[in-house]
Image 1 (cartoon, rainbow, N blue to C red):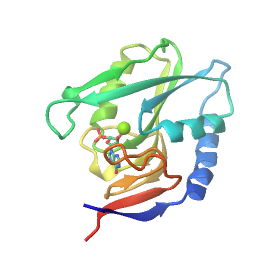
Image 2 (tube, rainbow, N blue to C red):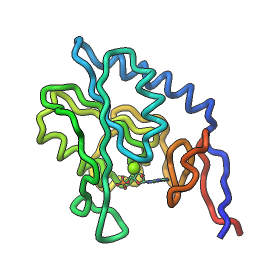
Image 3 (cartoon, rainbow, N blue to C red):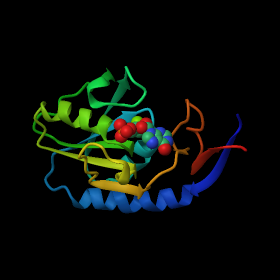
Image 4 (cartoon, rainbow, N blue to C red):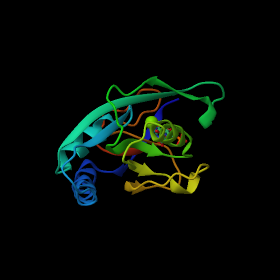
Length: 176
Ligand code: IMP
Ligand code: MG
């Protein structure tokens, strides 16, 4: 079936919001220690690349990738790392940068694992916060845009590995 892509957030709107978010993030940290920015692959890769250049302090970067197995609906118990961090986060300020927090199961899993490694602080920045769909109590500290429902693609977000390369964000529906 062919997909219909309806413009939802333009590349310009994303760029403007990233400047504001970068400022908010910069202002919320003090001290001289580097901030560890963690990119949740694959969806956050473009957002991550843009946002870390808007944060005005020293940073360290690393990447994780989560995989869910079992049922199609993600439950925290069914999630594993398919790529873990390579650096230590002990005693450091850590900012997880994610594409979308939806039900919150993926982020809940990730936060539990990272907390056990004793970071000094642990916060979340997400491009899209689908807060109304939450099943786990996960709070996004820095949210780019809020969305109540619908499936979106572009700017790193995919449907079956497609559309990640688009500069803006589009709502995906089936062509009728
Ligand atoms: P959660 O565990 O339900 O919070 O799932 C979050 C993950 O589902 C995100 O990191 C995305 O990879 C994916 N996801 C949720 N909604 C969308 C969407 O509208 N477009 C693309 N991916 C999505
Ligand atoms: Mg994701």
